[in-house]
Image 1: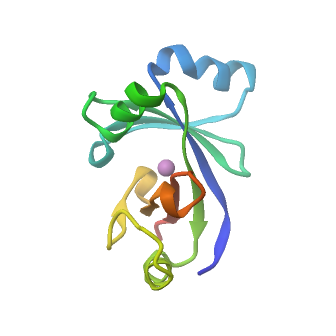
Image 2: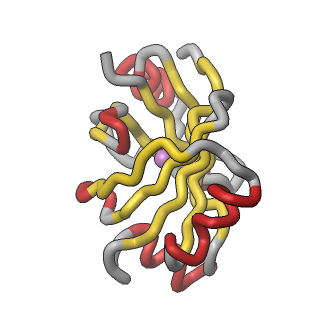
Image 3: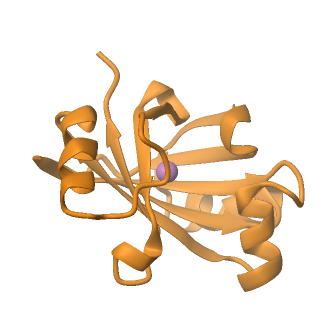
Amino acid sequence: MKIIGIEHIAIAVKDLDTSSPFWKHILQIPHRSTEVVESEGVTTDIYDTKKGKVELLESRGSDTPVGKFLSKKGEGIHHVCFEVDDIKQAIIELKKNNIRVLSDEPRTGAEGYQVVFIHPSSAGGVLVELAQKPN
Ligand code: CO
């Protein structure tokens, strides 16, 4: 498995309209896109430093993973995503090392990336996402 870099840091927010101005106007990180990811039940607002993105996650319902996170922990860092060269190979290697992955096959995440999540219990209490860029 080859980690290419930090792809993004994802931050759970209650309301994009309230949270986005800090990233957009104070830090002035260029806005890249806003996208609904139905499979994850979120609207994601993406800012790109060119050396790693910030993804704000607004839940689309209280029973979604981010909705549950917000009611349990409140706003804050939800996960850290690393870019990998080969996601399928990465999953094989993780499972070989008894690392708890949340799915056996990659799923399609924001911007068409193929992604998999590693359970926080296997990653020092942090929800870790691995992602492979679409061709
Ligand atoms: Co992510």
